[in-house]
Figure 1 (cartoon, rainbow, N blue to C red):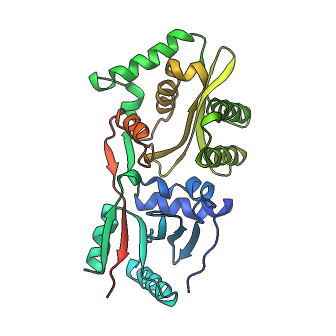
Figure 2: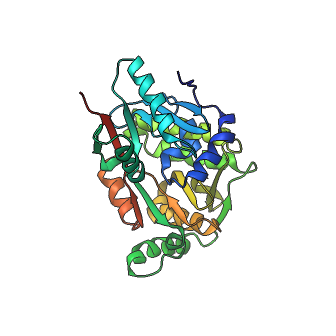
Figure 3: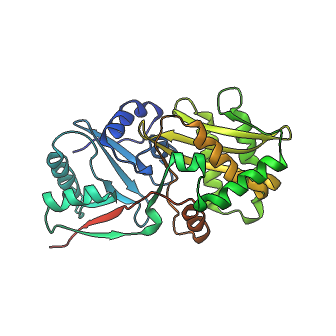
Length: 300
């Protein structure tokens, strides 16, 4: 049987190289997400012959194994998963299956799986250069938002997050939470706690990010991490009060993109079928909409 464990900080040391080498751009493969969401989805991880395999016990499409990621004989890994599922008297089920993984499953196990998709799971992936330059008619409104922020707060400054200012990033999150306290739901509290844990383990999770200061206070922040040298995943982005209204979100998005020399892509994750979030993500014109499927073994 496969050996499973809950993700711990030190697991990033073996997981990150496997993910980076795989070429997969999915946000679910960012180690920070595996760690920070480990309780929400009861995430378990397994190192099988240098393959990373995960298991989710969430709801809907966030339930099941994940396709083995690594370099080696994937058929052997699939056989191990088939044996484990059979031992539990369950059909094999995969979450977060990419188009490429779907093709591999269909080749190795023809006709064995049915596939379904939920657009709320698709990752929005952008050209970093596009978000940094905001050139052309497509980005005219976004550029205006950034210009408004700069005009309103000419003494602003942008700083990368480090050990000297990590508390300022939490101050922004505190302010955002207070701004939305009347609309509080369980997901907001979970996110608040995840951001706090991320900042408390900022270096261990190998996070990167930035803070905008205006009028002497921290007013916007973003937290991200590398999936590979070319892909950065944006986990959290917050702006508070009047600064949000006056272009704070567009400003932190733009300034963070500018700071990422060398990265080619920014994954801004899924919209979880929230219409307002979907419109916001579409307004930045993603270059890639990374589809993810749920694969369910057919009943015999």
